Length: 305
Length: 202
Image (cartoon, each protein chain N blue to C red):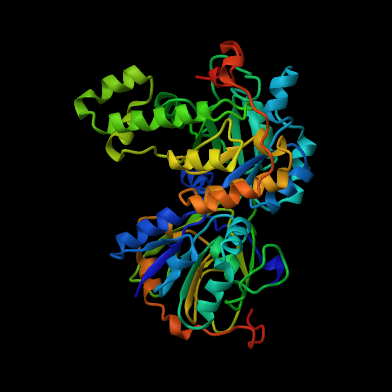
């Protein structure tokens, strides 16, 4: 078959459907998605077994330290990263900044993260995600927030955790809360679903779907504070289907080793012998911050609703 | 017959569910001992680079190839799984070289070009199968001993060969278990070493 004989999909095929968006999310399960700011970091991530990379301007711990307005990564940086890796490339857009999202769609990134790590662009509204041809991932701290984002068209959720801290406590809290709320909803009688939807502030049809199936309609990954192989395995044990690692890799003393260790631990999260191997191959983690040292007003997880 | 699904990364759970829907009791394969007694193994979609990395790390890469070539383990590769089964052409990631075909990664484009299509399938009772293509690879050459069971325009998308089945789409993402049933009919003992074969086909 010669290259010029080839054509794309047939005329009756469907692109950009919710089904193909969630399909990609399902392909990422059991994997590690790594924050990268340069093409060299992207290559290190791919070689360590990352399932995707997330292109951003600065990693969360630097955003936290340096302050200022954090925006979508520079276009040429995203393009360079797309050129050096063959795995999916994600990129972050500011909450509510649908034009940054359109630019990322035009660049054909594989997933957009509408992220609280960047400075929000709209204090009232998130992006209307359904019309886009590429999928979105959004952070959620509770079931209500998760269902609102799915209602807007998100194909994947992640915990917000507290990005840039190297502290897992908030991601653990969000995972446990979401699963507790799903369990409670799954035993709620049907004649109370509308009242639950009102209380949660979430679309009724999604409340009904979770109540009936006992699970979210899209995958839920962990993010925010994962710094070691043990952190990643803990999130998987608590029901996360994959993990995002931000500052945890490129702020450790040996990024390639830390990346490989977290990949190993995520794939075999139930096997303590493998986790020991993963710890052995990993460098020293980032130092990290206690939650008490971060005032409520500076917590990234409070951005968005 | 005992069937397993490689469950290190990717679309393993939907495959396990499809097999349960087809009346099987599949096992999840993460480590070498999980291969014991298996006659059939699904290599799911996911990232081919990650799957290669993890299989290599946990000693599964060589073992799966050896069992297949010894006629003990039938393989069904979907998407990333089909990529890994193809001819080893020196590109990253390495390929098993157990299927006389060349499979090009992400050849329809990035995620914005992912699509679904209803395609007719040879060997199934009537009707079409809804095929979900996610950052799909493309068969750019298919050897003479392979039988193409479904086409998307000029592209083979489901092929059957001695001891294996391979698809560039995701039959596990739809409710229809008929392709999984086809895999259960594959005879592992027909598999043979490919390195003695010339490169053939279109």
